[in-house]
Image (tube, rainbow, N blue to C red; front, side):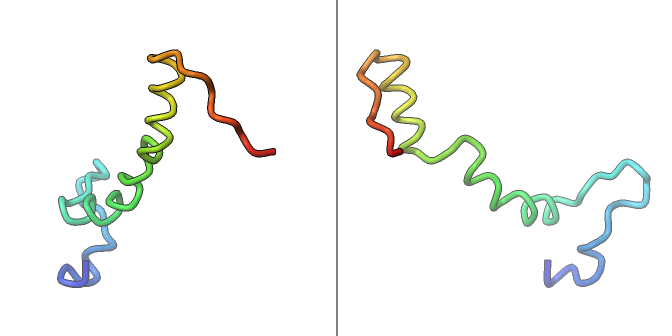
Length: 60
């Protein structure tokens, strides 16, 4: 984004609101890590629902 300079803050002028590849990567890289939750949460869901294991005790 630093390399793109002020242009990095702009969306294409075609009024289709498409971002350039670097803009998309920069803006979504952080959210990509939390979209589906942490690995442990996913493991718990699989264990509880698919493997029918007892639920993990939850804190109050």
